[in-house]
Amino acid sequence: MWMFTLLISTVLLHFAEQSTYCPIKADIVLLIDSSGSVGKSNFQKQIDFVKDFVNRFSIGSTKNQFSVVTFATAVNNEFWLNKYMNKQGLMNALKNITYNAGSTNTHLALDFVRQNSFLSANGGRPNFGNIVIILTDGKSDDQSATKKAAEDLHMLRAQVISVGIGSGADILELEKIASDKQYVVHVENFDALKTIETKIQYVACQQTSDFWIWILVGFGSCLILGLMFKLCWFTNLNFPTEKRNKRKISSAWNEEKMTTKRPIKTRKELDF
Image (cartoon, rainbow, N blue to C red; front, side):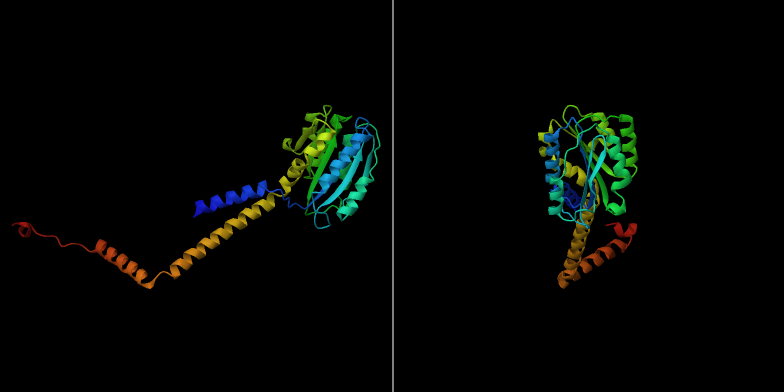
């Protein structure tokens, strides 16, 4: 029985992990590089990527909330988490984001998110996952400050995913920004962003959906055990009375046979 339950649980876990459905409910902040090296055309490709990515999620105050922050020399908060509670409004807001060139002060963007984006006044919800996705095409202007800002952001237990674009992206810095090395994604150019939408979705869902995966496995295991128990009980209850009696008689006879001592014959009785 236990082997069967383990097998079913494994199948359920595999199904949950492979499913394209993402049952997360999270506060997601997207940090978009607006530095001079990006350029207006490529900046728009980042916005298109964000629109396609956001379109994969359900939006609402009890579902997923999105915020967008752009950064270059300065940080610009495009909208807070609680600004748009429906997909149409969110999509319209993304269309209106403009490109403002400058340097690459990544540390300022990370500090801004840590200090502001997840506050309850700005839509942050205490019982929901916090996810930060940063898109950048190069090294930050102050790498030591960026490392410190990333470490401080990790202290909030936010899941940080870093996406590097092009040959100018610094993989080592991206690894320091991300919560874990497995949360680092690199693409060759801005056109390739559309090829990683599913991957980014999976990474975003991975941590926050673990709870639901184990709930599914646990529920499935309990359901199977309950059904097996009922089946055994029902089978025993409906076993033919005559056969049950025969089994009882047979069992009693075997017990008596095992406990009854045979009489010991004397030597005289053994002589012919």
